Amino acid sequence: MNFFKMLIELPIIIVVLIFAFVNNDFVTFSLWPFLVEITVSQSVVIVFLILFGFILGKLDSYISYSPLRKALRQQKKANKILNKEQQRLNEKVSDLEGNIVSLKEENKTIKENEPKLSMRERLRRLFHKK
Image (cartoon, rainbow, N blue to C red; front, side, top):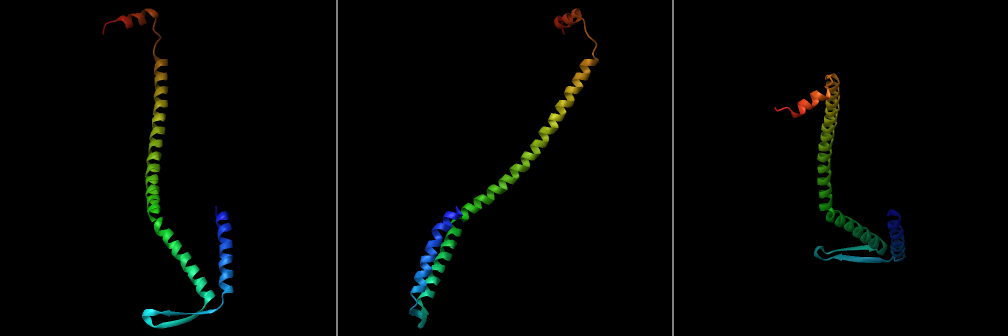
């Protein structure tokens, strides 16, 4: 992107500078309310006005993108909060997974320690009224 931007801007800058330095006559500016007259080279005026326009354009761009920058800051703040919440939930899930594994092991050891019931005892427990 920067390459294409430079590809467009560089020839424009070269043309403006050539135009400015070819027109090297003196120009007189009168600042009306102050009754002041200034005599300056035309190339200096052209370069100054181009530079002034460039700075004015950058300032306008900066001001027009301020709502976007504000929204971006708010989004970053929300992302930090959500990342902390996600880390907390991940820790909680890993603790719960550890609990599940330990409960499975306990259940396995309890089943191993139970005496084996005969088929008759199993059927009796199945149909026995509680």
